[in-house]
Image (cartoon, rainbow, N blue to C red; front, side, top):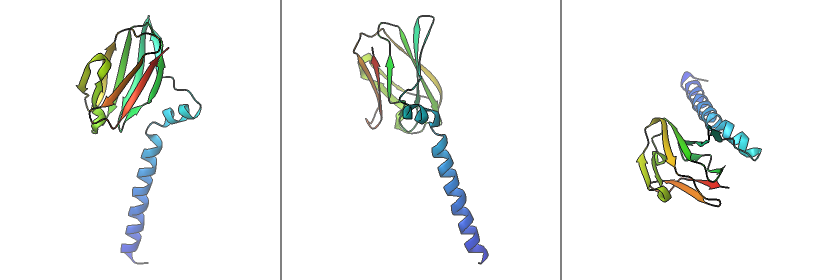
Length: 134
């Protein structure tokens, strides 16, 4: 084989490996939890509920279950987020903000009643998430 063919084969192999590895690390823990039927992204600390979500190529996890009647903070994490999921809208609490490309944004949510489904979406409506209060 000549050097050009070998270089092309190596280049394709390296690019393919990078793509496969990036798919495996993006949301890997979340995917494993979903496969088991549970995602532990909701916690209660000193009477306040914290819901951890990630915005990058959509929102993760897409569904969360939280306790009704508690003051709640959504912690939206971004990490190199350049897509439309950084333009977050939560209509029921009149929230609309462009999230930073990387960082954590805290969103205060007043106590919700049992059965409430809080929905968030990107400004284009392509990506969404839902928090159900039980």
